[in-house]
Length: 176
Image (cartoon, rainbow, N blue to C red; front, side, top):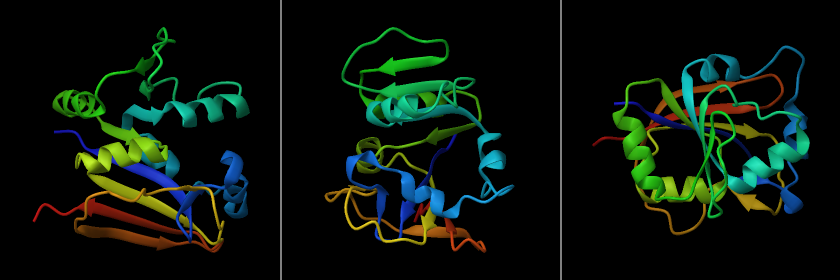
């Protein structure tokens, strides 16, 4: 069965965006030639799940959706026509993930946002968490993990630190 991996960056105080959906703090760790393992990770991915708000933000800031070459599901309440590999999905996210996991293929990548992460966590559907911690306090904004999520143990797969101060933690959901 395929795995669903949350691969995301957050501030030390747990924010994935500052007020106004500002992601400027991510630039703090930009370094020529350093992608923090992203290219290796994305090479193992053939399916992407992302929330509508995150998708809209990305499309306002880049000329082309970076995952357009992969089977992509934009989780939304508003039906919209498919654009190439990009499907706007209005159904139950739990059903979608169960269908995707049952199919042959590579890793399923959750690229945010917070509401999608919350829905997936609430249903126990995230198998791996790769969380890059940016060395900054944002103070306010959109939290990565919303209150009301279920508890559960995680197993540390790896922890890497970089000279920019970024620390990347990889956890797997504990099956015990």
